[in-house]
Image (cartoon, rainbow, N blue to C red; front, side, top):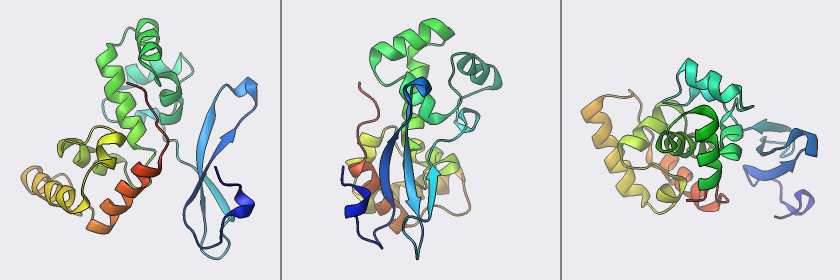
Length: 179
């Protein structure tokens, strides 16, 4: 990772891992955002678990009892197959469901991919960051438009530039999950 002091102003966004005290038992990915001052604001990319597709109130409560309340908490708890199996045993949720949720949480690390756009990607056959990283933007854009025309998920599907950005982000991200 390049030290913050070595980064050039005007290169947006800048991502870095922030290690929290051991008592917190977690790390978070942050993005620096700003136009004039590149270090002006820090925004965490974690989203509440209840906003992830497939998470009911009961399921969110079961995960909350395990100390999991955000997408990043879930990724930390479900990073490996062994972690997913352990989480399944503690919450009585099928390991396949936990993997599906973990994949959705992993996709939320990409700026701009959440909510309906996450659903569009899933309907277009993109379930993981790794799959997104391997796609050709023009082909994916065409597929997303076809899916949206058929299912009418949004009035404003993502434009080609947004999809190119998502793919670029996916290629730069560290591996979130181990399969």
